[in-house]
Amino acid sequence: MTNLLTDRDFWVNYWESKTDLSVAIPSTYLFHRQLADIVATNNIKTAIELGGFPGYYAVFLKKYLNLDVTLLDYFVHPPITEQLLKTNGLATNDIHIIETDLFKYTPENQYDLVLSCGLIEHFNDTADIINRHIAFVKSGGTLFITLPNFKALNGWFQKNFDKENYDKHNINCMDPALLAKICKDAGLEVIQSRYFGKFSVWLENEKQKSLPARLLKKTMWLGGKLFTKVFAFDSKQLSPYIILEARKP
Image (cartoon, rainbow, N blue to C red):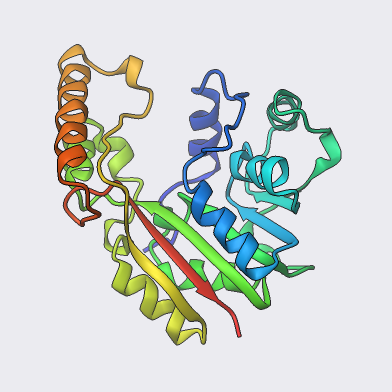
C-alpha cells in the first residue's frame, strides 16, 4: 500500500479550485492561544510550518509572534504566497520558502517550533510522517500538530456528503492515544494530545455541493453550536480537531 493518500495533481487541483486565498490573518486565528502559549513558555525564536501552503500559520507566527519562520511544502505557487504576505503587511522575504518533497528532503536546519495543521492525516504511515516532523525539531524544541477529527459527527457528514474528500484522509490516525504513543516511542515528552474544539462541520468547495447538502450542513452547524454553547466540552463525538504538543529532550 502506498503511503500517500494524495499526489501532486490533487494538491494543484485543490489549490486552483480555491478563491480568495489572500486573506488577512486575524490575531484570533485558530489555535492562536495554544501557539502563543508555546512561544511564550519555551522562548521560541524559529519555526517551520510543514505542508502549509499558502502559509497561513507561517504568516500568523511572523505577523503576531515575530518569529523567524520557514514554510516547507511539496507544492508552492509563489504569486499566491507573495500576495498573502502583502495582504498581511509582510515583505516577500519575511518568510523563507522551501519547495520540496518532505520524503526526499534531509533537514538542513532544526527549529524551536515545528508545526503542521492538516498534514499527517493524508498519509497511511502515521509514525513515519510524525518522525519526519521530529527530525526538524531542535533539542528542547516543540512539536505541534493539528488534524481534523473525522471520527466525530463532522466525519459522518464528510463520509456521506463529500466521500471523495473523506477518502483522502487516514481515519485511523485520528486518535490522540496513538499520536501520543508515537511521540513517546520517539523519545519525546508529550505535553498534550487531545480532542479540541466544541463543534464544527464543513464542506470543501461548499458552493459546488448540492442544495440539500448545504442546507443540512447549515442546520447541523447551527444545532451543534447551540448545543455546545450550553454543554461546552471537548469530545471525540463532537470536537472537530485533534491537537498534539510534544517536547524534544
